[in-house]
Length: 462
Image 1 (cartoon, rainbow, N blue to C red):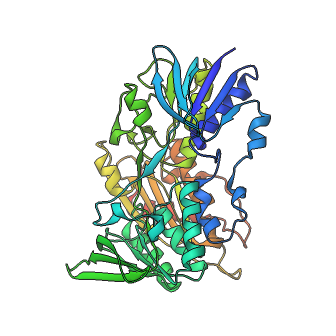
Image 2: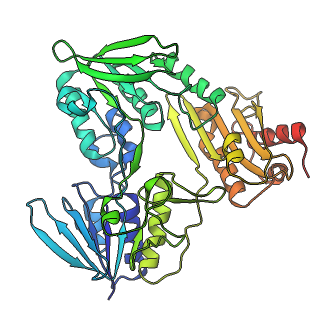
Image 3: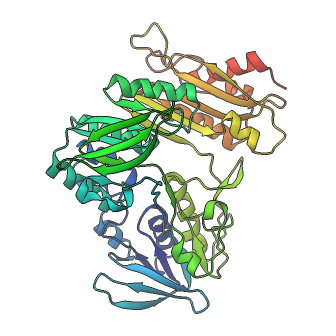
């Protein structure tokens, strides 16, 4: 009987545990979860806050009963504090402070990531009780919900305009709260080109969000009563001040590597746990997966790209290999999508500057186009803002970005590009794909093909 322990109750840890139980029902699988919420969808939090998903328990991918039915032992409110890799023992401490040593044959570390605290004056001394929140866990979610119920804020400031920041701008606006969104970079959603980020900004503004870009928050201070004062510097160096009832800080995450690092595990890109393509760490018998580890990118090599889809795949590989398998994580392409009110933005592969920085012999060039989502004669057709990047020399597809209305099937269309990238297709080769067509949903040449044909017309191909 193989004893497998997974540390972490989110995507990677649970995926590893499920795969181990699936492959060997006789294996003894234990999952150690620091809080009381195993297998909860962090990505779903904004939709609980908005009121679109209720009750909060529906955010669970699987219930505790579902997990128990697989035969795994899920230990909630239990922290892993020390790995003895030589003795193959894991020290854990439960909610009552009791310490225990668990023995294992294979250990999977899936400790995830933690919120980044930016260098903002006053932030360290403020917290949920004062209306200042981070948002990366179910605990954070309940603290925010408590503030919303007790403070009944009329307005809020969101610091950060990445995926979670944008989704929370929509969520709070949906609740009737006036939102100011502050981003230090030149445009919101900086994971896409600025021209597309501007479309997202327009959507925010159209729904009443006050968007401030090129604006750096310097301090958060308590004001009169329960009010807060956010002080920032604008693009021209002028002071910017907002009085508000609530502040949400969502400027990114960093890998949570303390457990593995203390045990001597090698760290890699951006301080994430170094793993090979089989998810093995430098410690014998210890695997790692999810947001705490480096990402093997199919086009960039080793990087760090925390994504739920990646964590699931890495965890599955780690769980299989923990039982002696030989499964490789096939690598990420950074495929991502976000809904902002009635607009959807997505990307996969590399943008032009990313391809240039990759150090390959590519000559990346990008073509913008605006194909309709379906035949124009059928009512409701809308344009998709598309940007396709390819190598001018070889014609190799390098990446794609799309922004369009929610009805335009943006997520599935970016998946077509992701599939093509996975298989190393050329830009011109996209036109050979046999894609579906009916006038209410598409065209004889799908929008993804129209966009690549525009690239070929501009840059040619070999």
